[in-house]
Length: 477
View 1 (cartoon, rainbow, N blue to C red):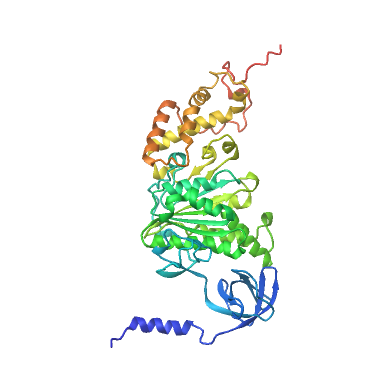
View 2: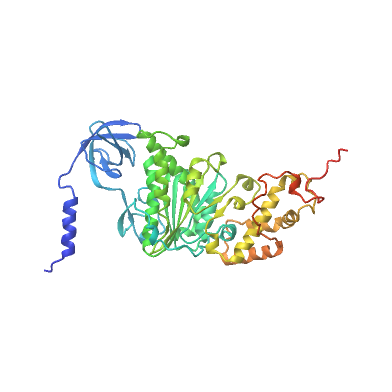
């Protein structure tokens, strides 16, 4: 018999850290979503089982706070069968999920349980859903573009391998369809898709219509809007933990989450239930503390990468509402979908002028970047004079850039529009953009204004003396 010093060390650590006596507590109060328990010693985030198991299975709960010597728990399931005096048993560990290669092609709930009726999942290991992001100094720089299969994104708002982009849009503008396009066409090796707070009707619709055959190399985590708030929060962390597992196996992972807003709303429910004061628009301080803990876990690492696409459901199409503003400050770029483009039949409804990738200079060639700037300049010139053009008040020749925008607008729109079943390769999209840029003949470099130039020039100073004006004369004399 050989002596194993490592095994002895592990056994010693397990004995020292384990509870040799099983502690039990009791339910004291149950108000709304909060269970107040007495007689237990547990930490924040620890999993506790509530119930005696006689008539119904014990309900898993999570420690979310403490008040007046009592432990505050929130359920990860239904509260049926819980009453005063019901036993509470701490498990001594945080919530964990099973991860492994067998997860590919499966649909699970926010707690890691299979939903697709294909039986249990043969997992390789258990993994905590809470983890620290990779150390900042161990993250490799992002220098390679990941293909998304969407022309407008691959060329004008490119995404690097390990970058995090937000998709900002109101309801019904095409976020799910865009995610489905990316999932089917991306060059990433594994897709992990988190549907947080989705309508129950849309889950199967997304999987069968939008995701399609891409399910074979995807993992879908679902927590519908009727689930308890903690389950919706756990679904976001479960999807991230699964993505981290595949990343640690050396894969390039595409993590897509729909939506961060519903994740924030679930945390707001928890915060208000335990007595946190509401802050901006009713969101509690813990919401803004939890967002970076979720979003910073995506990115590059020495072993692999997690490219993150996070949708943000903006309230009333207000791109500056609190959650949108907080998420935009954390991520590495943002894609804006507008209702006006969607109503005009322009899909995907990406507003190029409002969308930005902070790594565009690192992951595309200078020629593609210059062509993209030309297209942006032409689109901006057209938008600036759009009202005059629509009422027929614009006079051709008064602004050469606007003339080019009017002539080339059909070509640019044809490039930006794309059917959901028509994926493109990033290289082909680059060539098409370069062809468009070659026909524009626009100089995109604008020198900075002189230091003594007034901040708000008058209207006459905006046109050269004696030159034509874009606004025709009213002929009132």
